[in-house]
Picture 1 (cartoon, helix red, strand yellow):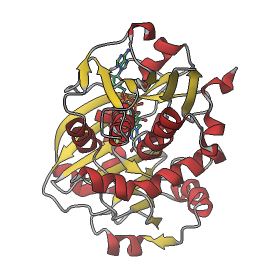
Picture 2 (cartoon, helix red, strand yellow):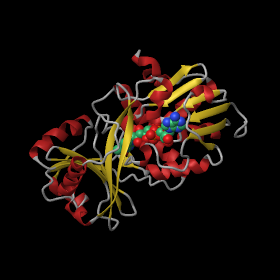
Picture 3 (cartoon, protein in one colour):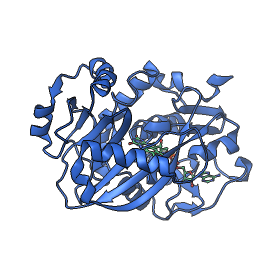
Picture 4 (cartoon, helix red, strand yellow):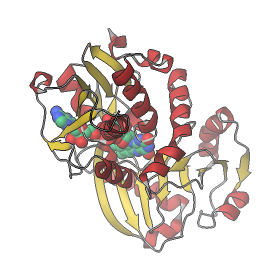
Length: 342
Ligand SMILES: Cc1cc2nc3c(=O)[nH]c(=O)nc-3n(C[C@H](O)[C@H](O)[C@H](O)COP(=O)(O)OP(=O)(O)OC[C@H]3O[C@@H](n4cnc5c(N)ncnc54)[C@H](O)[C@@H]3O)c2cc1C
């Protein structure tokens, strides 16, 4: 089959999930069109996301099927990134660090769960000299790496050039296609009635001389949790709050907690410029795992990726393209049926 001669597939939502699915479908011969109100814009959680690819970390105590999906997607990332070009894919890994004795006790559960060897403060500073002398203990998680979601979306938009239409869908019956894939993040709830809720996250972006940090730092400082994601160009993403709210306000408390924890762990960040403060909404489901599969004969859903949508983009694209093009569902999808909440 040549690209574009297969079934007519409409993808609703041009965020990272919709674009990854559309690119995979295009590559496999479908005649695909993406509908999004701002094809060149920055709506969507992907624009705010830090881009940590952490199959073990964030999900450690969650739904076991989710861990399997996260790991399967992590395995696809090297080839997915390789096909897209420079998307900031960086395998330096993560240092999970703890400031106080209480923070160590809190983090130790996760280090144990992930079978990570504990490192002393001085061992951590050998790897990352900018860490505060007050950091007590930590662990190195080599499989928790990073990518730049803005570069990923830019590269996917390029692959899909001419196939992304500026259009907000208000009713799925407006669309003419053989199959429609709804991948509209938080917008999926209104379109389908499925239980997807916005989970607010505030994020700061700082900028300074490149090279202050080499690894992603995931830390606890006096009970405040923060991650610091350093990009090669000197940007450091500082995130994120997690709030069960739909508003877009940047709050004094949110910014204070992020900066306080960031500077407690890496005092050298005090000299960095604050270049952005942004808010995004993670599309959460009742069990915080995605909804992937048929809604009816000609409608498929891929939404509700919550905190892991960047990590889950490659596996979602592959499984949904298989479903659309062959009609058969991979066994991995069973646990994520959109109708599982009754
Ligand atoms: C603060 C924060 C930090 C995060 N950090 C990470 C991280 O480090 N690692 C990770 O893996 N994940 C992370 N995430 C999660 C990740 O960003 C999301 O899971 C992911 O972006 C979901 O992708 P999506 O395409 O489903 O939704 P989105 O990225 O939100 O995109 C949805 C798209 O659908 C469009 N749309 C909505 N309604 C309609 C409609 N009616 N018609 C047409 N189009 C519509 C929107 O315009 C938007 O373009 C983070 C999220 C936040 C908020």
